[in-house]
Length: 94
Image (tube, rainbow, N blue to C red; front, side, top):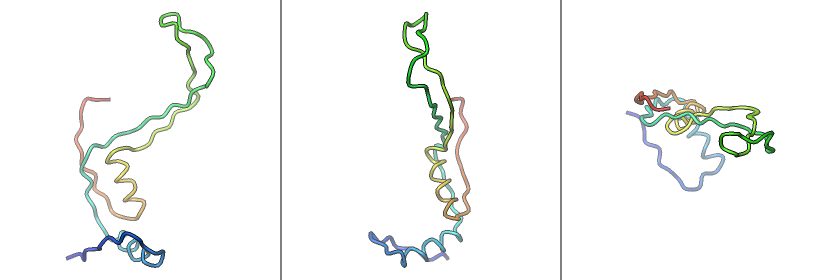
């Protein structure tokens, strides 16, 4: 049976090394709401005004995506070297 690691509020750099080494041996299931955040970079100055709304129109210059919710947790655990099983549900939402 795996040995429990107790949380210490203040860890020295020397004390954290065994914890990181232990993480590489763990297999963790993450159950939750896996999301994807989408970020749009826009031009700060409007290039024209919309006929329909009368509001300024700004161009999207780039788009990037990042995991969110349980996806962020799973990614962080994987970056520590843990083996991660992702468990979630699929819906019709965006």
